[in-house]
Length: 215
Image 1 (cartoon, rainbow, N blue to C red):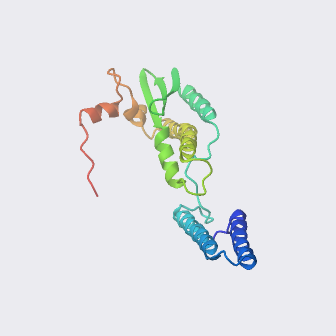
Image 2 (image 1 turned 120 degrees about the vertical axis):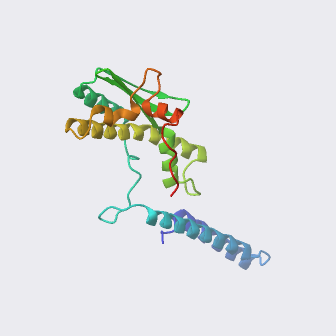
Image 3 (image 1 turned 90 degrees about the vertical axis):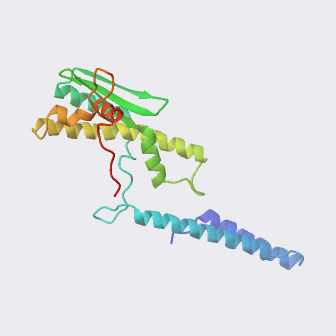
């Protein structure tokens, strides 16, 4: 079991000692409520530790048996990822490149043009933040408020999604370069149509794809 935090150890010891001294000196103070408080604190600590250990046991582990974190949660620079995306696309022969953020939806986008084909890639920082919060839920031992914790999740997502886009773009470009698929096949869903919609948005709006079946 997780080792009891030293602050909790001191708090429990102080309550127990305080109750004992008061009972011995005055004789009119019942120490039982103090010990009940200590028992409640210990029970809460044990419950929280058990939940943490259970959550850690469910996390994917690598070949060495070490717990794996959520992919890309430790990414440190969205700007570096953006620069790498731009460099890759320029080397691939793209003539235009732009990136930005929709503050209302917390969506990040990357646009580029390749031989007349305009591509629009979008990634949701909120979507990543929700996944991060699932892996790191707010609890009694979390620093700051719930709002602080959620803001931290969104900030991590805003960096992580650029790294995800970078690696996805790299994979698609590599697939095109080695002849695995054409440019249109690799980026079809995200190619912009004259209407301003992407191919996948048009297909969804026209219900050209059948609804997925439940398993």
